[in-house]
Image 1 (cartoon, rainbow, N blue to C red):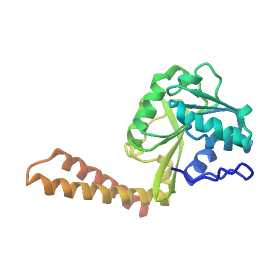
Image 2: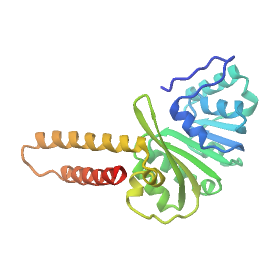
Image 3: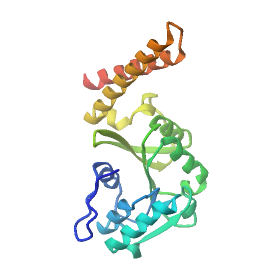
Image 4: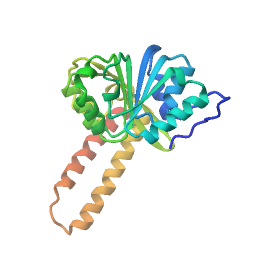
Length: 242
């Protein structure tokens, strides 16, 4: 769970992950935080004048209850509208400038957008932070004419998170490698990206070693996949560090 200061008489402090998410949001009228859980981000956006109104949604009534209580404690109930529901469904009839979908798997985020695709086309910007399957999410976005304008990457409690700033609009895929890692992060030779690449290479090597050890010499297609992933990531790492 993200560490956060929830005392009502003190400035709201966010974790590194959530701080990086809100840093991508330009001052606007209406923001929606899908899967808000405790409601830290909605309260931060209101208290810092980043949004005038925030819709906080969650599929779990119990989780949304945490947001409702927290918003009351912070004195922000009039500016934060809480709704129970699946994905974008609770806000499809509203005018939203920016939508945040964070802390979920990349495939689930893709499904949420796809299930409300016509509404999603009218959103000015999405801030997407997948916990897993970032490749699959990028692939979905490119295939469905969503433009990843920029990506950020942040380390928080020894975990690394990728965050995508997305707008509706077609963009040519210049290289398949940009489906695996953020284009601007590669070009900027981002230090945290280098750390992520190193971790992924080490993890895949360990997984491959275990598979080989347990396969008793039998051919395993997963080993070939891992070898390709390792080779691709090592080539990219060498390119960035050169």
